[in-house]
Image 1: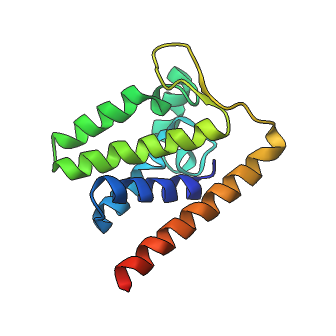
Image 2 (image 1 turned 90 degrees about the vertical axis):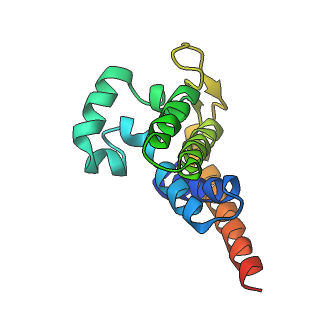
Length: 150
């Protein structure tokens, strides 16, 4: 999926796990793009190439940073320095990213196990799935905002 879809899914996940806190949405949105730091060609991989290149050379793409282990370790690491809701939002945002990638291919969710989990799709349907998912996420966020305002 594209970075914007991952950010939106992370926002919804962070908002949800914090019981409707907009700060949780912001943290989740940022965390939603973190797993693609293992891909030097991604938007954030290019920006943080000094992290992306070593990660990619050690693990490859959609392995360690797309795993339950990474989500838990990132949450625990963040918890050492901040409050529980921030760590929960980080883990939720990462898991939302992973779920999105499982819709458009396979990931090593149980890394270090070599088993891949996800839905292998033909490459022509990737864009459609990404756009439909993004639209549904925008509608969800719109509905959340409207219910808060009204």
